[in-house]
Image (tube, rainbow, N blue to C red; front, side, top):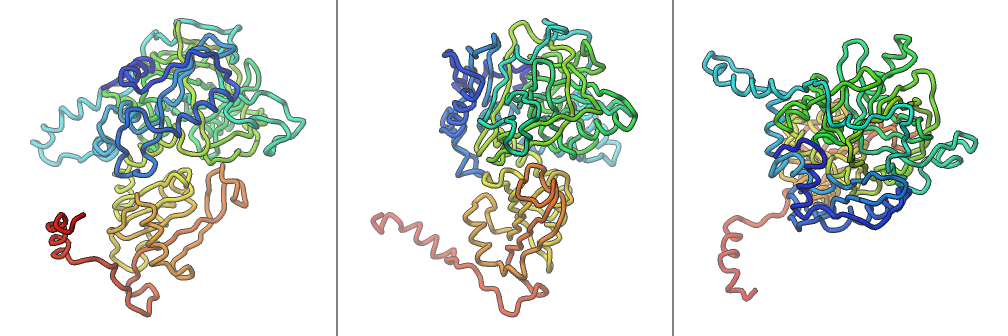
Length: 514
């Protein structure tokens, strides 16, 4: 089921019993976050069984929340909207992420027909794909209300997530830095353009509000938004157009977080997920198009010459990411529907809403990862790894040092370069059973022989790294060792019972009196 906008998705969740409406007055400073943190760690609404790929943590998520009475704003605040496996499946219109994975593979690596008959059979599919690109119109409901000179961040129910967010004298932010606020935009698409070819990018970066018209744009050096920023600066442009978009088709926030190939845009992917192209409309004050069905759009300019202090910020790592200087963003207009809904999220110790976005990506993009690294059978990003710290990988081992080859390939695959610990296991190990993986580390690993330490890029948020964005990473070969890998003794087989006796015991189980 495709949804045209955020509110239709929220109404759908309400009908499914997946939404809680809170009418009591709540404060956007910490209170909404504290409520949501509890809810996100409670049992998932609807009592759906966890997926086999996440048996331990897949039962959490609580309800989506709609706060209808937020102090200081007339606009309701939606949070935890995508914060469970079931809500992510509803958003993407699938019964399982694996079925979507097959469709994604056809988009990023289509099988090209080789005969005339095959080409004829492919035409309907190609015609369908041709309709998923974005379409620019003249007007949209996101511009029913337009504010320019009177536009203010403070009209929106922007939340503060954690107590020290944006605090001067804490987490590396100088005591004499501009005070700003601890309120952050956390669930908006950041729309930028490549000034050289006009290509659009949609990222999801946090934005710290400084005052009613100024904010700090937190994009890391690896992000496409930062790459566009460097291009504008290199051209000598004093400012760069940026739009901050809330809502629209509910697949948009997910698409903005996906590790897409360079030739697949987020808007194209969102159209692919929704089954039709995303409708866009020109902004009022900047040369940019944004989703016509968005709830709220903040238009503005990033100064290519001025950096301001941003952070600290309570992050998905479970710690405060340290303060640093980032580009200044200034509002030129805020447009919105007549009755907008403000979309936000909280990140912190998992599971939070971002955990389910990430786990959906883990499953949906497995075929793409296998295309890049055919040795991989399956992989798992355990919750305790906060996405980048741990990767468990299953392979069919064929030759000495095969596991090391896979580790090196993973570190060379896009955002997987940030993986701090990679554990490679044999094909008979369930990578989603974390205890099973740890058992095989203990059983098969000699630390001196089977651990590979390399230096390379790390997540900017990794406070343990000795340098900003770089440090050491560890690969652990937990496969059974074969000739050519430094073994001097035979590797024993894992204890198993014969199939015949297992069948006999199963057949006679009731006779035993159990």
